[in-house]
Length: 106
Image (cartoon, rainbow, N blue to C red; front, side):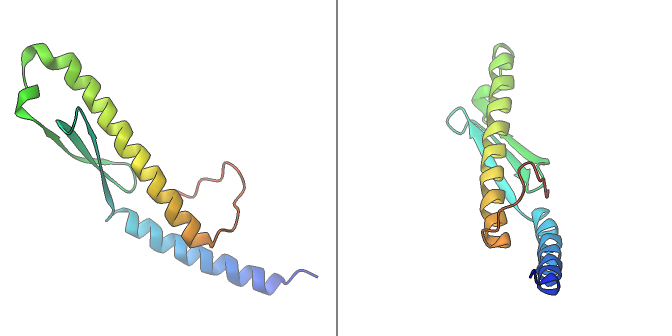
């Protein structure tokens, strides 16, 4: 027979851990870069861009298209790092408990 009280306790513990992780996401930052570090983007754990750094060598009128491409690449790099970090933390949080496919907790 299924231990419903045990399941409810686990669900309650997971909920409180998830709430703590949500609060922590505001404090976490990841940095993505492109062009060998000529352009970097700092992103919060919730995916918000907080800062950018552009090397002076890129600030030329004829470099506008390259600069735009580097922003996209740096953002993608930061996003990949963020997703990997969140996946690791989620596995630690759930103790390896499998979650249904497509379930987004963030």
